[in-house]
Length: 209
Image (cartoon, rainbow, N blue to C red; front, side):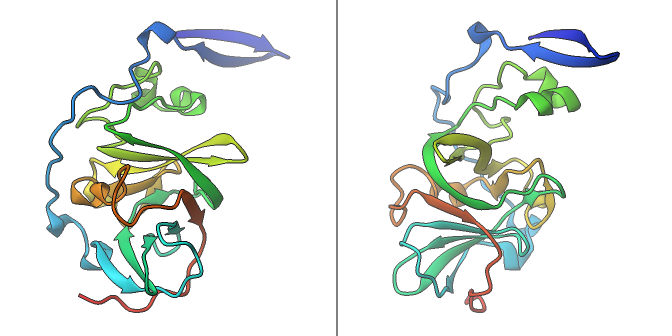
């Protein structure tokens, strides 16, 4: 990574240039074992469960309700697989409609330029962090695109299960890694759609244990 200071109208702007030779492959060549999550670290209402869900969306559509900190994977027969998620903090939350154009296993993390310039951890990995157990994108990631362009938002696993149910991220939607992520991996049963919606939902019935 090369950092430079550039004067613009008596101010100083800092920008950087990535080194393509140092950017890791999109996915790790190693398929690591996914560690289990201690469910005691996640409140019961945010744990994976099947709920009644009145929706006109195609089964397999991902719907994120950032206000309730919930993600729904729509199923057949008016049901959905519901997960508690971590969402973006104020000023970073995602909303809208997107297509899931990529699904990756143990993905690399290449932080956006604005994150590199404000965050020391991101700056350390300005050229990208290889996929693996320590990578903040976790074991699986879905890449959200709108109008043919990468939104830079992801739905991904997290190494911080205590962040589930909280608004703490830089905009991405966090799921606990482990079996939660397997439900959203490429080729998972019931995940035939490539649509993702970010919006407030009022149609989910009380959970069934």
